[in-house]
Image (tube, rainbow, N blue to C red; front, side):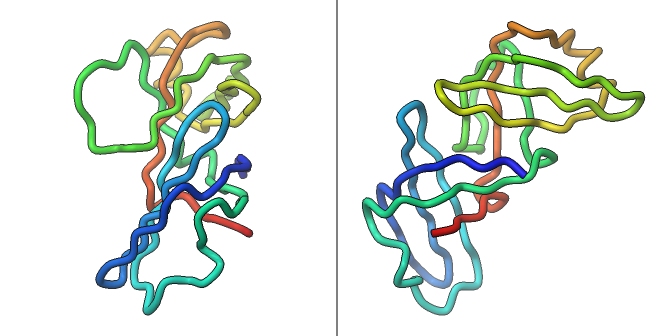
Length: 132
């Protein structure tokens, strides 16, 4: 599991959906919770939280330009690739944060990914969990 420390910037609640905007020193993120009966009391502006997400939920874009509906975009540098036969773990760094993306080795080869490459990590907001 990836874990990044952040601070709650804003909390929006409507019709059973909560969107939490988060900030770190280096980038912003959004988390979304659905089927929520009421706004959780611990979700308050300026509260420090841990942002948790699986390595398998991190997609990688190289030379990305254009529009995409994913709001969570983390400009990153590849620091290491652990290449397996079918799956690879791509280690990414953005500022002080280091986190991993698990993608197919086919994608690593097709995209010609290597240590030192500048990429964008993408994470769907509903794939992010928060811990206080």
